[in-house]
Length: 179
Image 1 (cartoon, rainbow, N blue to C red):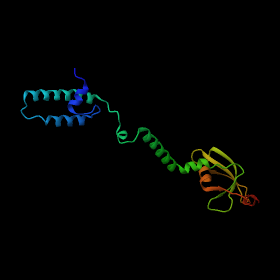
Image 2 (cartoon, rainbow, N blue to C red):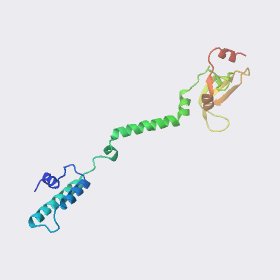
Image 3 (cartoon, rainbow, N blue to C red):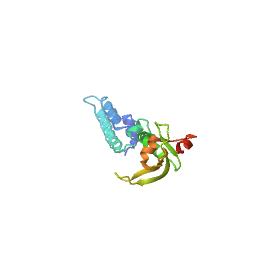
């Protein structure tokens, strides 16, 4: 039995040849032979055909070792990391309001005002993660005591408080809560 290296040499291809390169090399080698070859040329042509048949089986049985993105120069790890970074960025952008909601939390004693107003609205008295409003399902809510002199205690949804209100800082706190 002839080693495969001799077959590669006969067809003029490298051992890492692809099936397409093998086919091209074989058909180009066949063009060297005349239409009516001599006995010697016929023998050489049969050896060429045998080498092609053996190598076709060898090359055809190889499993592809590279994926298209790896063959294009993009390693799989980089593709996975890039995809994860892109997914994280998309989640951040799409959930910015929710992230702000989770990062903002007011404590009892904080005096709040609506962002569009300068006057304080109320002082945080408490917080419930599942407050039962008169309608709808339980939701997170803040209990506020109004600072307008009425001392009325109201419940506002967490979303309203954390997205529409800010802490009152400095001397306004004392004047806003004074009767």
